[in-house]
Length: 112
Length: 114
Image 1: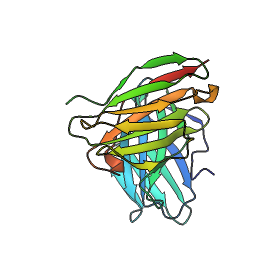
Image 2: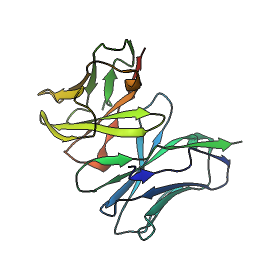
Image 3: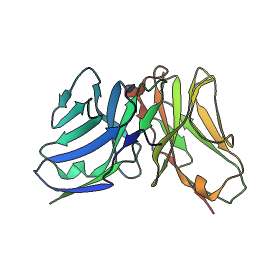
């Protein structure tokens, strides 16, 4: 049973426009959510996080929104840049243990 | 400060063999976690070691094992390899145990089982 779901395997967005990556979760005990970015041949790198006591966290071009009632979070990137082309993983923590549960990832393509 | 290093970067093994992968954490980091990444399942947690002790374990069969040394370097071992074990194996280090948002990942070891 997948506790963290990223239902879009890939997404293409025009350069300069907004990229919105979505993530759903099932475990209401999760209290911390993270987004990681991964380039080919590199390990994932931490991008941005949000605690369950907040509904929004912003860091430069990246904003994460959390809707606890819907068990849904999204990552907004604006404006999208060519270097944003990567695989983005949503992850959650706090579901009863210290494990981080990752989604399957969404591949973002930024089109010129 | 040097990042997390993993060796080897690429490995080809035959079904039934065993393999050992190595991870050197960032200097000063005492926690090492291992993940398996496959196209169908994304990133899945294998186990976490802290101060030479396994703190946490994911839902993988006993063929997957690991250990951590006194210098915090960690190895993971997979015995009796199966075709489905082909994956990218990532390790991540952090200063403290369970420090989820301060994890730094290595580049991974790409294991291919034929």
